[in-house]
Image 1 (spheres, rainbow, N blue to C red):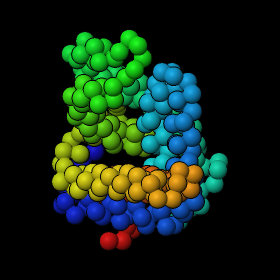
Image 2 (image 1 turned 90 degrees about the horizontal axis):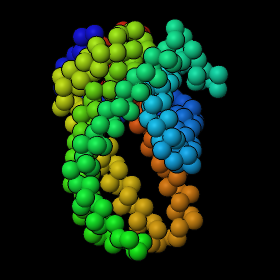
Image 3 (image 1 turned 180 degrees about the vertical axis):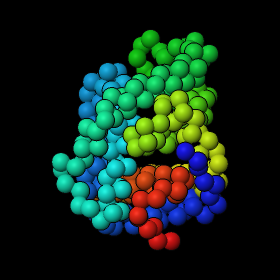
Length: 258
């Protein structure tokens, strides 16, 4: 798979193309955002095992929304039965579970690298009487968190295009990971624009969250924020297929309007 080299403007175009998909079937994409949010909440109910299962399922969930976005851009109505249909073809689900297992392994190693050198300092910041000093704990974990986030960025790049390459093109796993990181490197400038945009949206969301909590109260604020976050995630998911299509110059008959 030969990745194109796109100019930095495509970072914004991907968001614009995602909005096109979202406008076609907003309820379908909001439904998927609700499903993923529900899965995250369920994972917290089953400590450790739940989080591991969610990480392993991440490539499969990505492939599902890629297929959904492609159907939506082709003006095909997404029905309930259509969501899981792509996983039933050619043992794709088993391959994506293997990819998810590798994804978990990389994240696990990254967490060890980030925390083990600081484990004694972190333990010292945890009091035996149960009274945690939040400021002290934040200072202690700040460096491990930064180290982990740097590694997480690299891992994300490594796995970004892999579900599509494996699911649609039967690319072997090692090659899919290699092609993914090369494609992201070739398009680092639009990826930076894309990432900065979503980082800004994240900051804006938290800024208004704090403002609303201080002005209109918690109950109404949580209701509004839940709805807004579902829309934001739905638009985010809708950008995944336009990124893949433009980076790999996929000829699928879909015309993306600038």
